[in-house]
Image 1 (cartoon, rainbow, N blue to C red):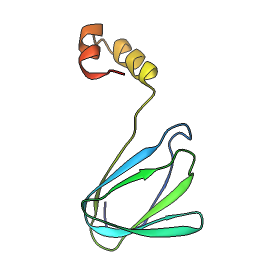
Image 2 (image 1 turned 180 degrees about the vertical axis):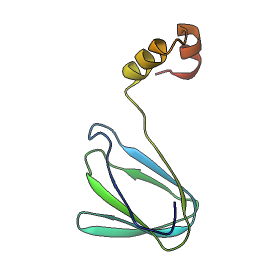
Image 3 (image 1 turned 30 degrees about the vertical axis):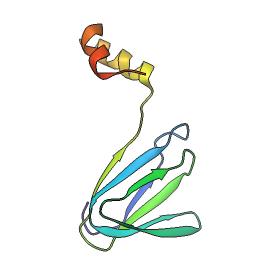
Image 4 (image 1 turned 90 degrees about the vertical axis):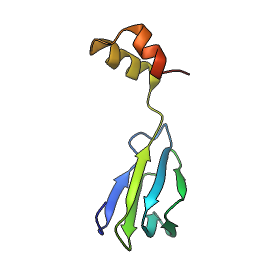
Amino acid sequence: MENRRTDWSSFDPEHFDLLVILAGSGNVTWSSASAMYQSGECWLIPAGLGKFSVNPNELSKILRTYVPDLAALRANLERDGHSWQEIAKTVFD
């Protein structure tokens, strides 16, 4: 992430997002609050939070991840030609 504001909103109000701060520092801002982040932290963004912003003070590297809809993921992988044996090695409940 460059040293600029990035607006995000939850991809799906049914799941949380996890931000892993790999490098840098700045602020995470949401509706009526703001908090500082720094390298080495993990932020759990609640489901349904809505729009939030990441405002770096310096060059930041942030990994954003979440647990997908596993049934849809399995179906997409199968549609793309992966066998159930391959899928079972990487997608599990």
